[in-house]
Image 1 (cartoon, rainbow, N blue to C red):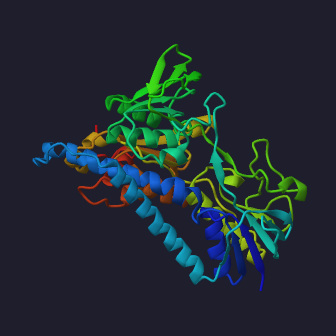
Image 2 (image 1 turned 90 degrees about the vertical axis):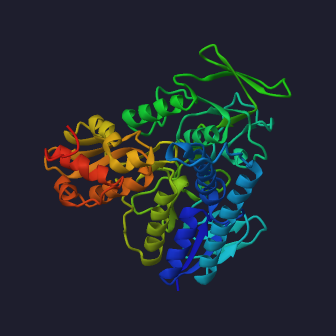
Length: 457
């Protein structure tokens, strides 16, 4: 029986453990913190639990337009955070149950690579195996100008530990993490300011969705400062943190969130000593089969680079496990990885989007429709947004797309299925979409591009 050692119990690590065990391997999973990693404990899941609370609050506030008189809702912030912990605990316990059921040995310790088939633990023990999968994850980056010792200046980890809603929140960094927290805390009642050094929010998204989100933020009272950086920080006041911006403005806030990206958590793992190659940013270099520069050592998840997304880490982890156990060369295909931003409105994309196509010099056909003509969107009072499907102009095959609007993070998967399987746009045209649904907008966009649209001019 092949013995597989896995360093890190986040999405990539625990899925690798489950898959390796499923394939008949003996598996040891080394993790010093909570099983589930950043996503389950300090990222995707707790953040979305807060977003869910913000959505409920907004629904009550807007209930009057549907004829429901509910009065002004009151936020119980400690109860919201308590529910967030309950959700996180429940899902983590579910993963731990799966690991026990698959007979995965979970070793609670810090580990480092001790050779092509060995991990050295912080208590001095050495685990030996036939293959090693590295999945140490990532950690928040920090701006040198922001003091690390002031409890009012926090990373996303710290924001999730707040005991009270801050009257004012300054978000430094307008990426996915910053935008999700900005949207949620604004709904909860904080006065939110976002500072982004680049010329758009969501640097990884196309300009059109980014502009739509920026407009929605400003409509909801979120101050957005683009092409702006932090020039100085004043923590002398016990009440607020004063942040001077490159524009000359000064922003006061009770809490400052530093959301300027994440870096690979690959320091102190002795990777260089064993010969595991890392790039200039510290990410482990792998091929498409998740193999590293050292024979028998694989890597998956955030530490292996690529989009830092849990669902991509799942696929990498499963791929690494299968290749480690069976010596196969299964490839983790990253061409159509959905990107989902849980803001209001939601933003989602996958595959080759419009801007990426232009950058690559591809000739494309765009299927586009706005949601203000979609019956379900009008019924729900959520008309902001659009659907854009990108097709290769040479053969009409769907290669990607973007959606802004309600449940965009769910709707994007129809485009992802089409792009992943290289379906022609005609396939979406022929598919009957139920009425009235938000998904109908995808069918209408395809019909419009084919010159058959009935609900657009």
